[in-house]
Length: 458
Image (cartoon, rainbow, N blue to C red; front, side):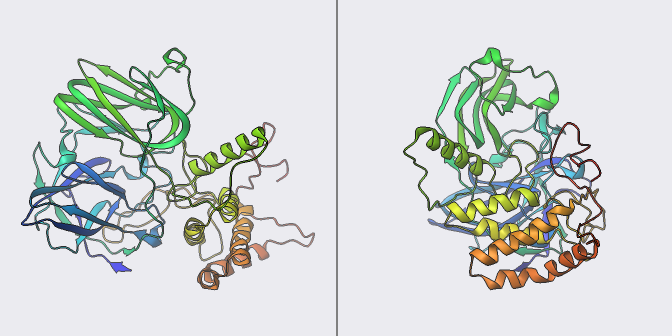
């Protein structure tokens, strides 16, 4: 574990929501390697001379905030390391994003960077996303905003502020997520029909001036005439392009099978690149089957599993992207059965254990927006805490699954201090008739005649 002390932030008067770019201009005398650790809140995307080199940090709970590690070759000459920092605040950030205090942290090992960091805030606003609620907000750029800032050029740059941060940083628990070119699509002017539903990052090359609107849809459509209308600003990311070439990187991956761009005022799409992402599973099973129908089912199941696994398990890749205890137990069992890499279920166990309070109550999903006090700034964040009592039993079963299937007593021992109050709290609500009657949202399933998913009398 590394204890951090100083994080870079924009001016103290700059508060979320914002998209800020940091830059470090440096010069090297001969070909070498740039090595550094970084962390960020909420998310950062890093570029070297305009080329994307990293994104993160790995999503986690507040007690295990992670750093990322970067090693990249640099040639002799002048370079710019830049970082895009997305900080949306409690009202607009994704449901699965936790927050203490926004900022960027860089600890260099190669002694190449300049001590002088600068920042520039993108002139934009944010609106809640529709229809993919619960994910990161839509971005609307103002005319004249500097869309070249990701390269560390253009606009006006200001010196950063250094702020103390008391959180512990932990090494990554997972390998880097996939970032693989996806060219299996059909292009209909500025509409992209993908062969498969997947998680994707988009990189768009434009010629300005003009306006660009980008939206991502979950289903597949035969042609443009079938697309649902999108008249609300909440449907689109909107860019105002200056004259000349502009490259735009999605600031979060999107799930689905269709991407639409609308161009106005002379804007031209020169090229669109897409990159599949998700957890890099290593499978130990064969998904072929002599019966074609069974093989199609296996393929569909595999792709569904892949779309619900990123830096955490997810209940839905298009909407809220939360790691619910009930879904996660099933997903972990699938992982044990078909994968040789168990890093993701191990991380899920550690992360979900943070959702248990000292009284033995367990939130139904984690990480997620919740009560927290900024350790150095003393500001409280808004919260929503929801307890589904049966999920406490699911988590106990999930730990039992791991203990039974994996010879790893160390992780089970690590989790025991959290499990004991959880089990004791459950036992306290065991009635004489043998039934558990626990307070909370006794959710079972979404049925029309059940109120909020709770059985009659439940």
